[in-house]
Image (cartoon, rainbow, N blue to C red; front, side, top):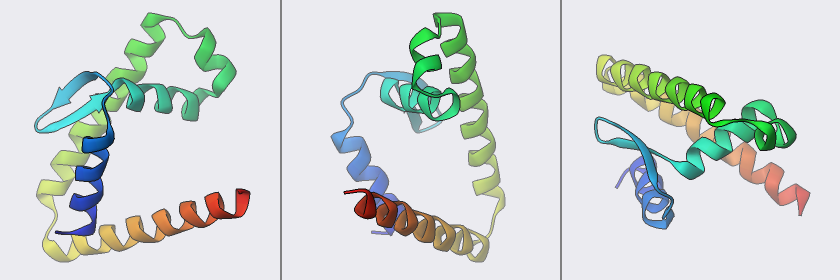
Amino acid sequence: MHARAATEQQSQQLDTSPVVATIGDEVITQDDLDATVVRTLGEFAAMQMDDEGRRKVLESMVMSKSMAMAQRQAMNAEQMAEIEREVDAFRDELLTKAYLKD
């Protein structure tokens, strides 16, 4: 199994958060939405955000997923392999930062 597919499958198996949107065969969960709100606006602003604000963030996430899906379909195997290399490098960078924080 490809690393990305394995990671997504593991993530879906561990994620018991309710699904708030479905785009094709991909989903956005409540946890995904909450994390995006915090990452985008910060914890304090996230706590103050009303339902309308969350709806707008969710709409943005749906549009982003839709564009990513369209681009994925338009790319050839070599282009996708390059994206996967970049994703792997970024994952390693994030894991290294997490390790150094502990």
